[in-house]
Amino acid sequence: MWNETADHEHGAGGWAGGESSFMTDRKPDSKAATLGDRLPVPVTISNLNEHFSATDDKYIIGNFRFATVQTVGIVKEINQEGTTWSYDLCDPNNEAMEYRALKYENEGSNSDQSSIVEGTRVRAIGKLKSFDGSNSIMLFNITPVTDDKDFTIFELEAEAARLFFQKNMNDKLKSDASSRGFQGMLAPPKSRAGQQPIQQSSQGSDKKERLYPAQSQVKVEGDLRQRVTAVLKGVSEEAHEEGSNILWIAEQLQEKDIKKLRDCLSGMVENGLAYTTTDEETFSVI
Image (cartoon, rainbow, N blue to C red; front, side):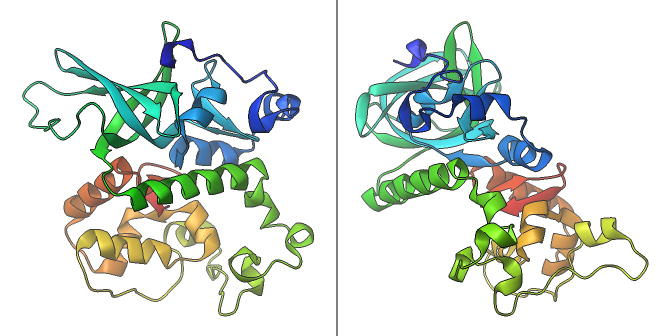
């Protein structure tokens, strides 16, 4: 049950069995910590229950510790107290595994919760939090999942993320020794056809190159969110990890309304489509 979730950080059960010392004794590097703080990683409710650390409110995969998650569950019970909505969710594939999600609404909020009803399947995105012995997701957003294909896609994404971070593929893909022989999307960046490394500034200003990755302007059709996604997916792998500054994004889109662009990016973050990286003005897409 959601309020009976044990702290498995020092345990040896589940898929991480036998790796407790690796998970707890190794200090995460700065990039792993940044990724863990920013990326809303997809995870099933069952895995979240089994590998949640109540000591620091993190979901643990290998040496990565994620503070923000996105999951899919069936609503078993809904409660409202004032401006607080509480949703008890269960894993669609294992109803014994439950997790609580909380949504705080501001006074006078026009948010419509009528589409979230008991017995329906929902996607929940939010920050992990443990207090008073209860583990919860502090919701950024909760939306219905009516299409079975969307749920299947989520299951595949959650399993891919689990394997990717458990096996520390993030570092292996950057290692010439480890990635030798990898092909296609798993091939290291320098061996991919057409891959261009980020150019160093003639004045040696690596900060400018980090904030404004060198590449031609991307002009695409569609609404602002689609255009932002196209631009952020078009950067090099290194720039994708570091993120792109909002001013650089605006320059690529030829978008003069920075507030409009910031609102768009904030909405993408809340919906689990993007995340901030080095600071609140620098973004990357999932």
